[in-house]
Image (cartoon, rainbow, N blue to C red; front, side):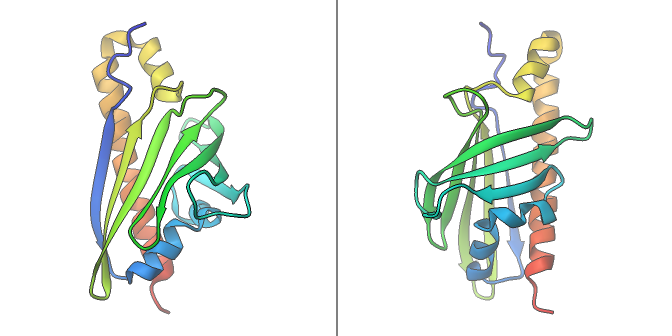
Length: 166
């Protein structure tokens, strides 16, 4: 089956937040707060007591502009305190359809945040969109990647505002 370039499609943003690396770490690992900041993710909750270790799981719920909702399970792939936090996203199959990751670098009282998204081999809304519009696959993929990059910036900006001292 033709993949049309979905697997491995990725986007990234790099922003400087006006809060310490400790504050950013607390924010990016507080999956239960993502709903306060994200344009798509409206709910997150840890499923395991041992949270910040590879293999820990959390659930997330996303709502898209067209009203479509997804319920996913995320599995932490890396949790290096104050430097890296990442996870794979699973739908109803054994292969992840996405990987998200944050890399943090302290810059005095600020933090450089490099966030990436990479599409995996699993099934997803993007893959369905490409299947439905194969002639426009490149535009469908790029449109979603651009949307994700914008959402990443919005989420980080909202997180920063919430974490800034009163």
